Amino acid sequence: MKLASYADGSRDGHLVVVSRDLTQAHYATGIATRLQQVLDDWGFVAPQLEDLAVQLNHGKLRHAFAFEPAKCVAPLPRAYGWAVACADGGVRRDAGHFANPHQPLRAPARAEPALAAITGDLNAASDAAAALDALRLLTFAVDWRLDDETIATQAAPLAVTPDELGDAWAAGRLQARLVALHNGAKLEPRDVAAAPGDALARLARLRALRAGQVAGVALGTLDVPLAAGDSLHLDLKTAAGHSLFGALDLDIAPPPLA
Image (cartoon, rainbow, N blue to C red):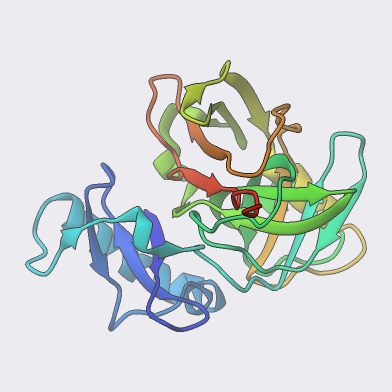
């Protein structure tokens, strides 16, 4: 299933279920209003949301409406933690606060995309297989870093169960294509791969993880020189060109008037 959180004036947004083709959505009211509620009681709540998703995909929900990514906040705006497993084997920990998919940035920064794995409860010292069992949802995130400090972390509109990823997901591993537009010009696509079970197990090596914690698998720095007034569009897509988690669109604040 595909889930999103619509902006409603609250800190966490309102949970919606999104159709497989990303055209329709339906509020999850009556089942859960926030994604954290789902993570806290996954075994009971998730099957109800799956039933709702099936009905939505078959056009059987009378109160479905057109899905608008521009109305989304991050799927889980206030996670219990955010840590990125870097390619060099290190782990970078930051606050688990995720900006919405279209939130402007105040200054140019370095874009470091990551596959973000949202976990259920996971015991300390769990191996990668146990971590995959605890994996609940995946999304796409970007750390914006300036002078080696993360100044913002932005999340894509959709959080998706692995079974929704089709051929892009096999043996606990995501294979996708990172597509970027810089000021409207398409950059060379990059094939990426990520194993979120390994990242979750690394984070759980010394301590248990709580439902709602997020582990990122770094996908490499995006080598694009950004300047004030620029725009950047990022998307993780299948080989066939289908968006997996919805796009991130960033506008960098224009230079100040002289």
